[in-house]
Length: 363
Image (cartoon, rainbow, N blue to C red; front, side, top):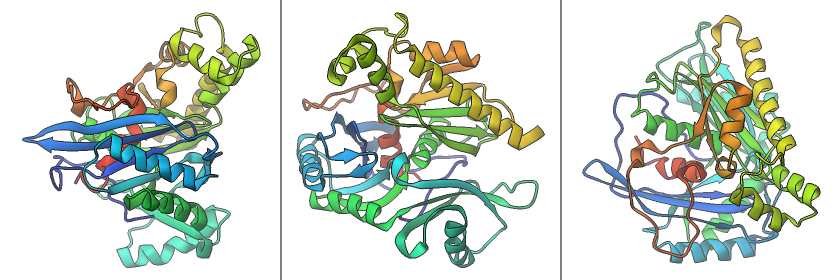
């Protein structure tokens, strides 16, 4: 899946060259693309864009029509006027396995020998049929038991090869294939200027609301402590509106983002279920960690669901912690915009693609 470069701590952020790789986040509902540049310490977009995923091209996290998806990606490359073709890709939560593990200090050679055993121990996969990788969360901090924390990720080889194959056919050169928690953590590294103990990241929760599912990350003392996939996404909100108002999903989509539907009481069940799963996950983490865990003081929300009117305030009222849209602080006040006709939206929607663009470029 490519070598891991994730850094959760550090005193200074540097970039390998002026232009970032292309970050491509392909979801069941939308494709998001980001490319960045830095000049004299100022970070800006070369281009960013979001467009609907071709109907029937992706279902339940699996590519069902690679030809249609490749054509769309090739078209986006032309319209967004991207520089070069090197790209980082992301596996959706439905198509990969993820687990936080602890291992004793190991050399790089011994770590790679250990990974196949860990993969078959934690996931229903045989390593011969798996693409896998691990990421050391923080080399400078060992847990109280002398072990270090890693993210272990794996996917079926066919799934990984199909995604990279689609990108290659569209004219891109895939550099890496990763999972969105790493992308979200990389954005936080940039937001905190490489210092995770700054207020906001020390004990913080990140929630990425996708089309079919959501991903919740809990960070303590600058280290990822807990990761869980929640079975609530934008689609649940659409289905509830569709059922309550006898509308198609397309009609429900217009209502969801153009009106404060939560104030009107629909789709209140989906919002309540999301809040319940967040609260339950935080409780589960605290029970597991005992005295070593702390409740997050802030929940930062990204993904397509972050733009649902009223949802941020609703989650704040239910969770009794501060809730806000994820911000790309390095781009605060940046007016660089994409001049194509591709739909633009708030920065929170581009968080995963933004983190992908940073991979291998941020060091």
